[in-house]
Amino acid sequence: IETLQECKFACQSDNWKYILDYREKKEELYNLSRDPREQNNLLKQEPRVLDKMRQIIEEFKKENPPLSLLI
Image 1: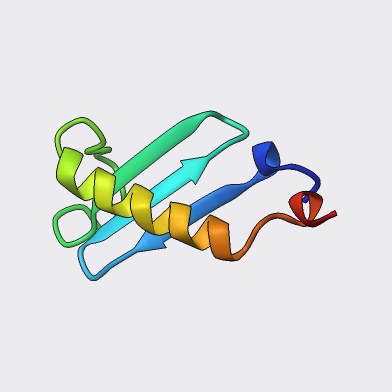
Image 2: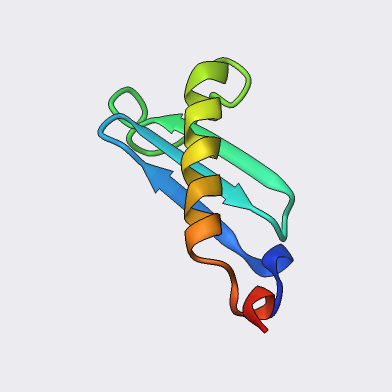
């Protein structure tokens, strides 16, 4: 991976899955207990869950920067 823009991150809890795709400039949020096939993106309907998942990804990125940011 050369830059952060080429990264794709995912975060999953018992009931939720969040996907952040920098290349496609896209976010997805699914309730896995109600939607195990990830058909209904709840990004706009669940702002609290979205904020929590974003925080988790941000913490992960701080602790694990892409290689290009380490050079």
